Image 1 (cartoon, one colour):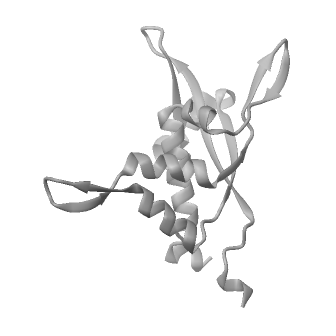
Image 2: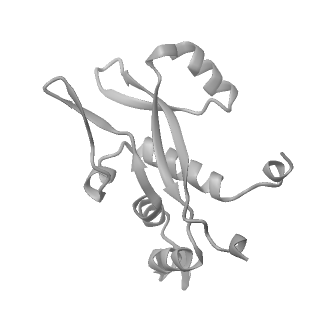
Image 3: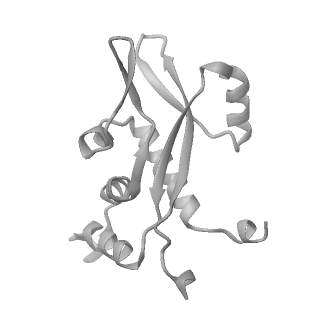
Length: 149
């Protein structure tokens, strides 16, 4: 019977990225998806410059899923329909279900953990946040291929 309930266990969602500087001197983050051919080429290209962000997430239960959707529905006066507010949905997914991360900062030559809280989540690079959400959604929606493994 217990198999029908959300486990409450955490699972890892990690992304690979590299800090780069554009020709005009702007610092940017490039997320690398090494499951694609382009991503594999990027792994070869950037090698040891690649960093990994490791996070721990919880799986949503029925109530949490419904509450999340309810909070993210917006009325569109043009269509007369209620629609999902995707930016809000992504932001709340991270806020509600990401439980741990390995983000650190350096102060006086010492690595210090960065607290996982809304203010710090809001400071994430947009590409990093979207990549985390995409991987979370991918991990919580099991495909037929994964079931066959």
